[in-house]
Amino acid sequence: MHDYHAVKALVARLERLPGPAILEVTVRASPIFSPEALQQAYEMLTAGTPLAGSRLAVEEFPERRECRRCGDAFAVSPDLTAGHLVICPRCGEVSALELGVGLDVVGITRARHSLEDVYLKMAEEDPEARR
Ligand SMILES: [Zn+2]
Image 1 (spheres, protein in one colour):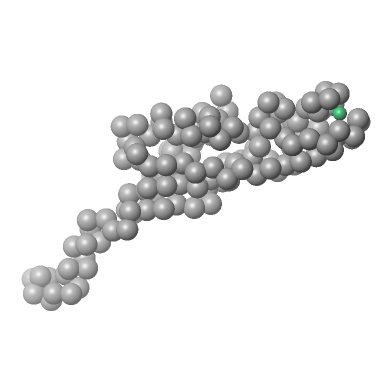
Image 2 (cartoon, protein in one colour):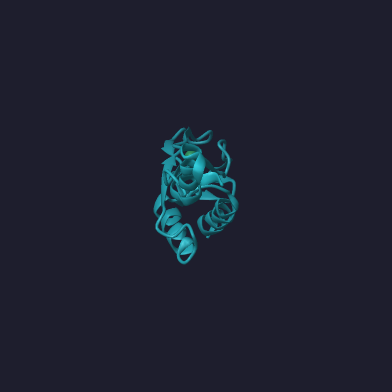
């Protein structure tokens, strides 16, 4: 469920951004998120909005750790987290997530020109058009 809430907040932020249409958004996700769940939520939450049809690209932020109790080394995955905690798959020892629980936007690809940009450019190139 945290995937859904994080994407909902992300979509709300993206909708407020001015500028040409967004084609793709790249996020760097904490290992508590499942990329598939994020993409599904994004598709669902952008349907019927100006963001519909845009893609969400997820860069995973792998976090490996060694359990302080049993020494098992493992990669943190959504199955092994609860809130801000990581649970050792071998002995169940609980520790805190180090990289946080964020979903950070690291890139936005936009349509090259909005209609407005095209009109402004025409006006610059042809002084007559400005009258
Ligand atoms: Zn352990």
